[in-house]
Amino acid sequence: MDLLNNNLTIPRGNKYKQNLNWTDVPHPQQILITKPEVQLIAKETIRKIFTELLHTSNPSKITQRKVFTKSTNEKYLHEKYFKLWKNIVETRRERRRNLEHAKQQKDKIDFFIHELKKRKTTVQTLTNQSKNINKTNLHTGNNYRSRYEAQKSIIELQKAKLEEQNRIIKELKLGQLCADLEKSRVKINIREIFANCSRQLKHKIPLVMKEESKFSIDTRKVPKIIQLVEQKSLERAEKRRIILERKQQIEEARQKMIEKAMEEKRAVEEEGIKKQLELMKERRRKELEMEKTRRRNQQIYAEKFNKATKFYNSLLLNFCFHKLYRNVQKRRDNEQLAAYHYKRNLLKKCLTSWMQLIEDHHKAQYNKAVDHYQENILRKTIIHWCMFHQEYVLNYQVAEDLYDFKLLSNAFTKWKQYMIDQIMDKRKRELLELENRKTEPAERTLGFLLGIKSM
Image (cartoon, rainbow, N blue to C red):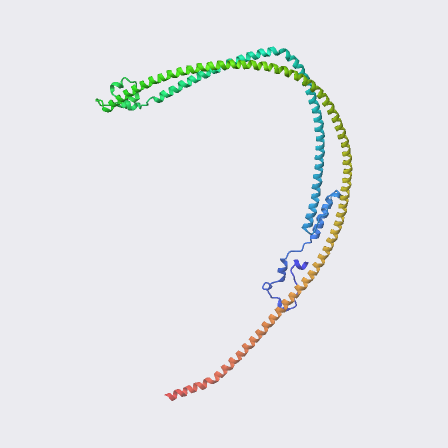
C-alpha cells in the first residue's frame, strides 16, 4: 500500500540515465494516484451496528440491520414499522370498541329511565286533566257571555273598517278628477307671453323684479304678433272656463252616483250582517251540543287510558327486567370470552417475539461470518494487487531503461559515423589542395607561353 501513496524511487543500473528529464515521458504513478482509494465497507457498517447495540438497553428492541444491499434493509424496516403501526391501530380499535360498548349500555339505561319518567308525567297530566274537566263545567255560562260581547265588538270593528274604505274611495275619486283637470289645462311659456304683450297689461300682472329687464320692449307701437297673442290668450281663457263648467257638472254627477252606490252597499251589508248573526246562533247551538258529547267522550277516554297505562307499565317493567337479566348474562359471557382471547393473543405475541429474537440472533451471527469472510477476501486481493502493481512498475522501469539505452546507443553510432565522414571529407580536401598547388606553376608557364605566341 505504500507504493500507491508514495513516489516510487527505484535505483537504475545504467550510467546514462542520471541526466534524463522524466517530465518529457508520461509516468505511470500519476495515473495510479488519481484513482480513488479502496474503502472497507464491512468494518464501518460493523462499527455502526455495535454502537447501536451498546446504546439500546432493552434486548427485545435490538434489531440487526442489513449491511450490503439497500433492498434488504428497506424490506426489514418496512416490516418492522408496519408491525408497530399494526399494533398501535389494533390497540386503538380495542379502546374505541370498549368505549362504544360502555356508551351504548349507558345510553340504554338512560333511555329506560327517561321512558319511566315520561310515563309518570303522562299519567299525572291525565289525572290533572280529568280533575280540570269537572271544574270547567261550572264556568260555561260566563264563557258564553264573553263570546257574545266579543262578537259584538268584532261587528263594530267591521263597520268602522267599511266606513274608512268608503272614505278612501271618495278621496281617490276626487284625486283622479283633480289630476284630469290639471292635465286638461294648456301649459304656456310665460316668458314668451310677457315678451309679446303690451305695456298696459304688464303693470297689472305681478312679476319678479329680475325678469322685468328681459321682457321690456323699447318700441312705442304695439306689434302685430302681440295682438295675435292677446287674441289667442282670450280664446284660451274662454276654453278654460267652458272646460271648468263641464268638469263641475261631471263631478256633481259622479258624487250622486257614489252616494247611490254607498246606500246600496249599506243595505246589502245590513242584510249580510243579519244573515251572519243567524248563522252565528246556529253555530253556537251546534257547538254546545258538540261540547257536551266531547266531555262525555273525554271522561270515557280518560278511564280507558288509565287502565291501558297501568297495563302497559306492568308489561314494560317485566320486559325491562328480562332484558336487563339477559344483558347482564351476555356481559359475563363476553368478559369470559375476552379474557380467553386476551390470553391467547398474549401467548401468540410472546411466541412471535421469542421467534423473532432467535431469528435476529441467527441473522447477526450469519452477518458477522459474512463480514469476516469478505474482510479476508479483501485483504488477500489487496495484497495480490500490490504485488502485481509492484511487478508492473519494475517491468515498466526496466523497459524505460532499455529504451533509453538503445536510444543513446543509436545516437552514439550515428554521431560516430558522422565524425568519420567529416574526417574523410577533410582528408579529401587536403589532397585536392596539394594537387592544385602542384598544377598552378605549370598553368602559369602555359599561359605565359600562349601570351607570347599571340604577341
